[in-house]
Length: 308
Length: 270
Ligand SMILES: Nc1ncnc2c1ncn2[C@@H]1O[C@H](COP(=O)(O)OP(=O)(O)O)[C@@H](O)[C@H]1O
Ligand SMILES: [Mg+2]
Image 1 (tube, rainbow over the protein chains, first blue to last red):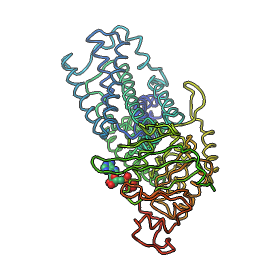
Image 2: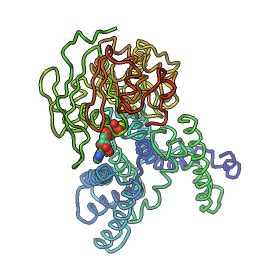
Image 3: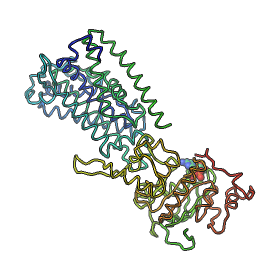
Image 4: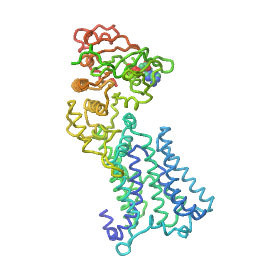
């Protein structure tokens, strides 16, 4: 980080902070939800496409079918919750690894996003969204920004990020469901024997992740006023990496919401830092890989110490 | 010490229980009671049907034939929750603890205490920590730190926590599945002492084991299970530890007067 500050003087200006905070915010929202899910012992590879899926629903319903923009936004939320519930139910009913189940969902949603969008509007990008009636009434909720510094913007997504992190932290550490999340991820059989509602907890976590996908979908839709059928594809691993860097065990039962949020902050800063430094952004992937391996290594040794 | 001849009405009674897995009989015509203030030991080798019996008493399995009676009334436990609600708790060999979670979180898992209302409803950590410490100390276990992951405790300590948890959860009858099987001599003693204290507090206990040396010092009554059948039923007064060992071996192997030499804690048996 210091390095980026040296290479690019704007990195640590208020303007620069607005840029990387915006970047970190959407990853942070997802990382918190994905971290909760991982602590609960599951993965969701459909979390990335979910952002595009929900944005497309709103885009298509409003621009093509004339549905009220608020109604469409709520419909998208319910669609997301339904997909999340389906993911969860399949996982708890069949006992199949969520990695496989949500990989299937990932492909289905990705295919549906592209095929349906092309079928309906003949192209893969929604246009004219900002001209939809009522756009101005809802846009500030997800896409507004306040000017900071000289030319910078502080986006409302940062407030969402802080809110999601706070709620996630509260639920995980201070409530009964939080206790159950740790438990079902740590040992589902033991949890069941103690009367923990294992299935409901897991399904709830999948729905939470899907809802977070919706929120991020709305944030990107209302900030840019457009959405492509490929939005979000490939992002799911970044969420997982943020959660792992933040201390979540891949094996479940351990991790923190604040950690995942900080993981997203590091990612956002690195992502924008590389851009500021005018490097090839592909370096980001290499950096991610190294960061992931390092984090897994540290987490693993901590776990070994605890359960030795 | 309790006197097995003064019998209070049983908490739970299993009458002529039989169980078949498909066509094979795992239990045939087995009767057993849980009495308040008594430890009934069920002894038997691997495959004798001990686990099957536990599963029936704890509501995990429905017997193929026979009847359960709770406080004298016929009862059907359709699931473990039903048995728990009736005060019948089971501590399984795996202990049903989550290793990475702190002791107090494990202790209250599924029945967490909260304070506050609505969205401010939150875990009552101070109360839970205090209760855990007190409950463990009451039975003679003093933990340095109830915030440490339960996986860092010794096997014996974990076993004691699981027993204390069941008692705190309102159990009046406890079924213990081989609580000493994975433990060394010292740890076994700690656990057995703990079990005796629970008995002295008036709980009814069933102790499943295949170790006569562990059963005899604490048990009030001994039921020997072999190939799913009850082959013997003795009270403390009419059996010695050596006889118990002999009976367990089907009366075939004759043991010397110091059975400790030939029978040790079988640590490998899980
Ligand atoms: N789920 C099952 N399906 C079929 N047979 C079983 C099952 N569980 C146990 N058995 C059989 O029932 C008998 C008693 O087993 P079990 O109750 O586990 O004995 P123990 O706990 O004393 O070792 C054994 O012969 C075992 O193979
Ligand atoms: Mg067994």
